[in-house]
Amino acid sequence: AEALLTPPEEEKEGLDTLNVVEDTVEGNSQGSRSTCVSPVSSQGGVYSMELLETFGLNLHRIDKDVQRCDRNYWYFTSENLEKLRNVMCTYVWEHLDIGYMQGMCDLVAPLLVIFDDEGTTYSCFCHLMERMGANFPNGGAMDTHFANMRFVQDTLQDMKKEWKKPFCKNHPPYFRPGFKPQAPSHKQASLLSLIQILDSEMFELMHQNGDYTHFYFCYRWFLLDFKRELLYEDVFCVWETIWAAKYVASGHFVLFISLALVESYRDIILSNSMDFTDIIKFFNEMAERHDAKVILSLARDLVLQLQTLIENK
Image 1 (cartoon, helix red, strand yellow):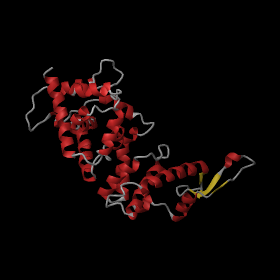
Image 2 (cartoon, helix red, strand yellow):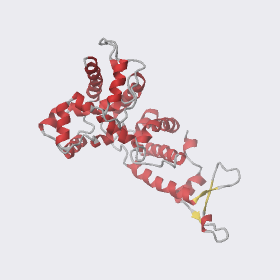
Image 3 (cartoon, helix red, strand yellow):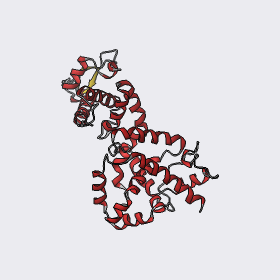
Image 4 (cartoon, one colour):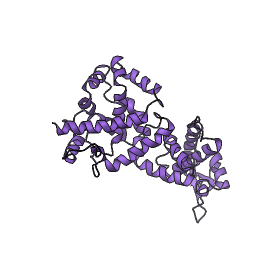
């Protein structure tokens, strides 16, 4: 794995220094080339200056983020931070069209802690980014998340179709095999607000105090699957629950976890009549202080609560 992720010394030196020269052909300045030979070329081809400059800019961003990523966690010694850098650099080199964006190190770090292997971590991160990549800028998924938090009529209809029989306590609806509600379309005018259904008092407060029903305060939650909100040991449990929920309950279980975070502190939010600035500050201060088991339990209860409302409608 290390051989795959660490470039040959000659190539590494070329990448680190970006030692490039201009090789003009018949006065054409577009003939700019580097001295860095591609190891995959059978004809001695070299990387273009544009490619190396792009990669160099990404390296600068990676180096800044790696040095401050989870430095208080015991695993991230200088040696393991170098592993994190290798994984991140390899991903960016193979996905230069995406490049590095802040937050990617946060997604790689827990995987590296578990596997302690660069190759396995890289492979898993690539797979994780198939789902998470769209959350980053230009991906478009974040707007959908915000819309889904407010508008879930399609999801409710899917739930209604699936939940046709009563459930006993040891067979809750969120574990029914095969239940996979589709992503709601936020363009439909008749869509309902999820939080308005479950907690109208909270919804009214959010609407009146500067109207932060856009849920922008959830941005970091969606971007990193709550990684910065929880203690490190709890991140693994929450991530596994989200991944499992895709197959046994819903691919949008992150919405219910988000609502559970809000509902956990509803009394504090309501009693202090928090506005948008207040709620951002509050959740920033509460980072790594949440009880993950309580949050997950409440998220499941919210799914059950929706099912009950639908059955009794």
